[in-house]
Image 1 (cartoon, helix red, strand yellow):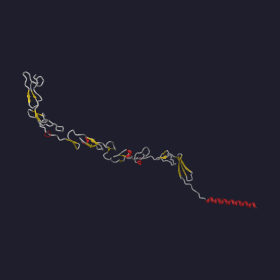
Image 2: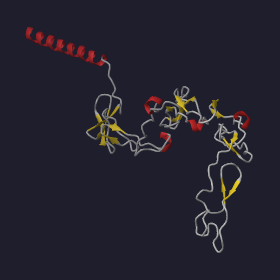
Image 3: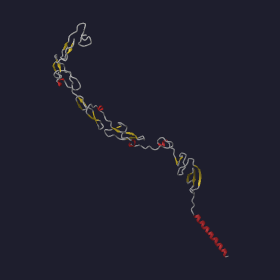
Image 4: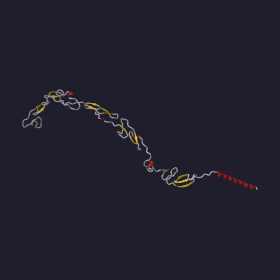
Amino acid sequence: MKSKLRFSYGIALISFGLLLSCGEDSAAPQTACTSAAEVRCEGLVLRTFDSCGKVEDAQVCEHGCNEAGDACGEEQPCVGDECIVPCVGEDCGEPCEGDECPAPCVPQSCDELGAECGALDDGCGTLLLCGDCASPETCGAVEANQCDCVPTTCEEAGAACGSISDGCGGTLECGECEFGDCEANQCVCVPLTCEDLNATCGEPDDGCGGTLNCGGCPAFSSCGSEVPWQCGVCVQTKTCFGLECGPIDNGCNYPEDCGSCGAPLTCGGGGVPNRCG
């Protein structure tokens, strides 16, 4: 009788425990798995997982996948570990380079281009202004976009004498005047007259490179025999001594006749002046 009671009591305890256990399980919250919670490309295989981590679908990644495991689409082929979007001209704003947009243009500065002045392209199609040159230099006088000064010459400045600036901080010496004085870098010469020289005869220099004609002397006198450019007592410079015929200039402003030749001879006929031949 006691053994039957103990058996019945044990069965009751077990049953009660099972009831408690079933009661606890039925009270526990049940989590539903969400379908297609994650799509991951692994080893070029595109797998679809539910939220519980179970693989629901698998297919080959036709266009590869990137480093993050994202599958590259048809318009985004995989290059290395990246999905590349092929460029279209209008996307780049300029022609594509292969399948990629060209690198953005980096404009250069005046210093990078070695430009001291003026305007030039910055390498990206924009006009770059590099300023002006300080006087007396000018931009591009010798080389484009460089400040230089080209000195002038006496000829270019129209200077015939004296000193002038070369336009670059230097000085040019343009020489001296052969005649007259240098005024405003020009040679100025006022020619002398016969009166200035007190000349009554001859052809004296006018002091400016020219020659004056101050007239002659009367017969039996000569110019400069006593005083330069003055008529004085004639001193014969030539006589008929040793001559046979013809007139001669004796230096006294009148002709002197040295005679004539007998026929058939003529004066100078033999080819010698003042000789019969």
